[in-house]
Image (tube, rainbow, N blue to C red; front, side, top):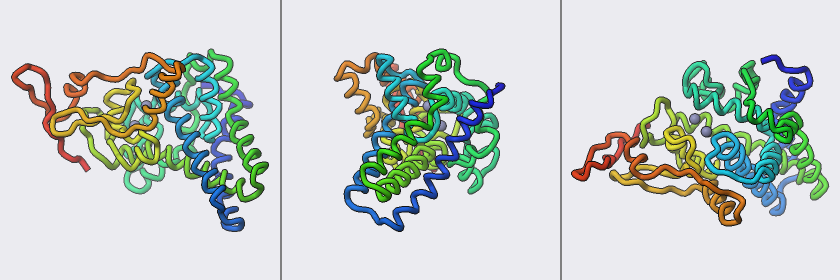
Amino acid sequence: MNYSLLTIVSYIIGPTLIIVSHIGSLLILITGLSWGSVLWIVLLYVIRMLATTAIYHRLLTHRSYQTPALVLWVGCIVAAAAGQMGPSWWKAHHLNHHQYSDQDQDPHSPYTPAKGLRGFYWSQGGWLLSPRFFPAKLPSNVESDLVLKVIDRLHFIPLVALGAISYFIGGVEYLGAFFLSTTLLFHGVQTVNSLSHIIGKQPFITNDHSRNSWFVAFLTLGEGWHNLHHAFPSSSRHGITICAGRVVYLPDPTFSFIKMLEFLRLGSKLRVPVETDLLARAKNRHFEDSGLPVAVETAVNS
Ligand SMILES: [Zn+2]
Ligand SMILES: [Zn+2]
C-alpha cells in the first residue's frame, strides 16, 4: 500500500510515544507515588484496556456484537488513548494475525521470524520497530467511515490529551503515573501476542499455538483465553474451556462489560458459540450414546 507522507508521520508518532512513555515512567522515581496516583494508574489501565478489548478487538475487528455508531466512535477514541494506534491500523494487523497465525505473514508471532527469547521480544513489541509496522493494506470498511478514519490518523491526540489532563490534575507525579500506566498497558496488551501463544492450555483444536492463559487473562481482562478466541474468533465471550468433557465458563471481565452494554441497550446481537459446537471443536472428543460429541479432558500442552 502507498501511504501518504502525512499518514506515515502520523503512524510513526505511535511507537515514538510508547518509547516516551517508557522513559517518562522514570519520573515516579523522583516524585514517588501517593495512593491517589496509584489509583490513577489502575483506573487508566482498566478503562483503556477495556476499550482495547471490548471495542477495538471484539467489536471493531471481529463484530462479535453490535452497538450504535456513537458507542463505536467514542470507544475508539478511548482505545486510541491507550497509545496503541488507531482503528484502521489496529484492525488491519489483527486480521492478518488471524489469517496467518504463527506463519511467516503473522505480524507478531513468537515463532517467526525468530524463536526463543528473540521471538518473545519480537512478539512483545519488537515488531513495532520493524517494516512490518506498516500494514500491507488498511480495511476498507474502516477507512470508509470518515469518523473512524479521522480517529485513525489523529490517534495520538487522545493519548497526548490524557497526559495533559494527568498533569493538570496532579502535576509531575500524575504525569509520571500516566506514563507508567501507559507503559504497563502496552506490555499487558502485547502479552496476548507473546505469552498467549507460548504458555497455557489448548482445549480447542486450532491451526496455531494459541493458548488459554489465566495469567494473560488477568492482565487483559479476559483476552488471555486466547485458544478459545482462535477457535471461535467471532465469539463475544472468550472465557470458555473444556474440563472433564464439559463446557466450563471462565472469568471474562470484557464479556461482563459487553453484557453491561447489552443491559443498557447499548449493545446487541452478542455472538456466543453453542455448547455442541464447542464440544465438537474440543481436543480428544468422543461421542456419547446420544450421538452428541463430548470432550474427553484435554492434556496440558505446556
Ligand atoms: Zn493470537
Ligand atoms: Zn482476534
